[in-house]
Length: 121
Image 1 (cartoon, rainbow, N blue to C red):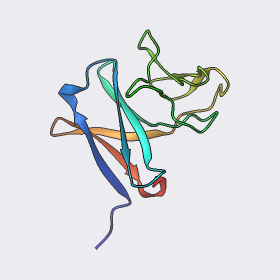
Image 2: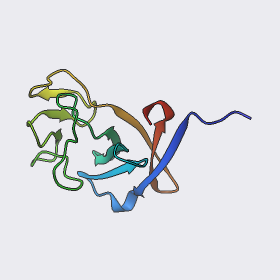
Image 3: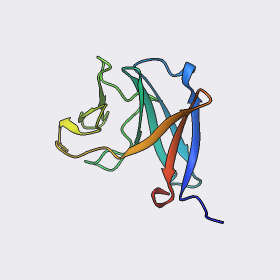
Image 4: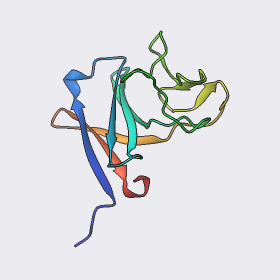
């Protein structure tokens, strides 16, 4: 019997994730759970690990607050780095050219599911 090399996390009902909104999630116990977020943008969903490649800390200060005021990019609340929603690439700021760690996400029974490889845990 082959063991899965991943964990699927049920984050939110798709109907509850409005366009240009984000929802954060965490998986694991203790001081260092894996933290991430999903966003609904241009009729698609994207998931990223909630970790700034520049400073190594979470991107947001407020719950589920990851987008620029225009709602068209991801922003790091600490240093103002701007990331492309579609690719996770930093397009402005101190980590220009670096990328957020993208996580696989998909819909199952109208729920947003994020698949976390075990090596990320």
